[in-house]
Image (cartoon, rainbow, N blue to C red; front, side, top):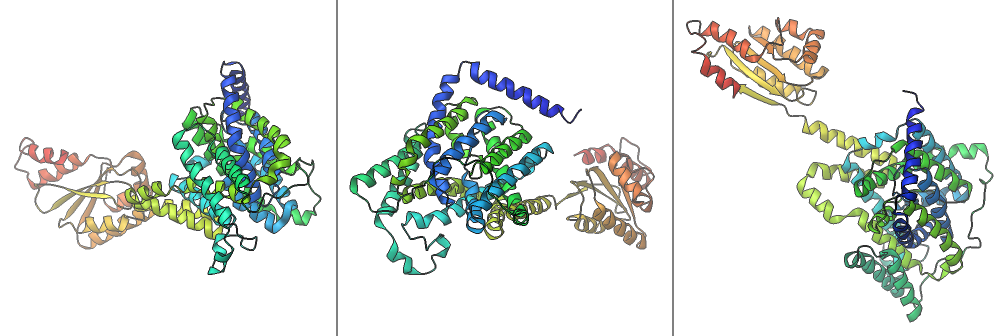
Length: 547
């Protein structure tokens, strides 16, 4: 198959999907869903821009530009592309350390890397990430957002950038009653509205109610800073080559984070509305969106699970919904851009706090801790790794913890003794499970403990054995030989037989045919021990073996 074949198929499927979306009879329904989605995305995108220390208007037109490109070139029929809460902590860190110039270059480079990953077809690897690692990733992102937005909800000055900086009680004197009250209104409404009316734009209604309350009561609270410009400016800022090269590691981290967020969101939407996204096409589409946002002075983007879920809840079924929400964001920029400075900062910060709390899901974590402590430990390892060392290293630590858990699960192998009536000279054991470094020594010790001259080992239920297991069995054979005892393998499947022969283990154990069934080997030894009996007399013995 040609390397272009998957992309030709992707282009054909995308064209057919657009034809069905536009002429399939549900276009008007999806336009309505797109408008409802935009009502959720408007306050969220503005809040994310401010959380990243960017002008509020950047969130609106970034969502418009990225939403358009994601809808046109993506493979998920209902995924909304735009500013994403998972990217906020890293985006803010880039702005603080490298300024706006560094952010734009990082966004462009991360997008180019995403396109490269998509063309190399590595997007499918995200499906190999264990679910507890994904949960830990979401919990860590939620905690990072809470850490950055809590001071804004409390109305604290810019001196306190993060909640973890509140190490003494001096900040209590700076807490503003107005911002706290407005934040409480937003959090309560953001939680209550979906339970009363699932399709209502909870984010917009919560923010709107808090802004109206602030205006009616004259609440004194810091407002959204006004921006001199409300539109994009084409082109990357000037930068020296050496400076750009120093941004590559940060851009790679942003690329991996944006890719992971986008693919997880796409997978989630497949579950919600059906269909099957193409991971590599999603990477290319979001890479193009990030490259474009870097060129027009925007912020990094990814698949927004919050906005995508809002589109599904509003009845969206096709790409028309994400495309419509992008258009509405553009209109909102023109109409609302000059008035964004009327919104209290505490209101938007509280909105992000509500979204972050939904990512953490404390009740689900409690159920996981009770039902599967091992998986909960992987979640904790991932979360702590991200908080301490960053997203990329944290995810690597989480995957490592999941592999350790997997090894622990398979560390035990069933060693079951088969009841025999052949006297104490023969003992038979059935092994069940893979033999590897984690259980080889314990298994060998159990076989050695058998009080018999000949130890039969049935390998019919052993799928694989690694070099550690082979070494342990080699040493067992040698120890038994010194005691004038022998080990006999039987029931091995062809792949296992080849491993035994290649390692000379079967020869050391004096086995002529390690594939013989256990019953045949036992029959041979039983006839030796009970040479005066015929096969009918041995029938109860073989029935016990079968059991």
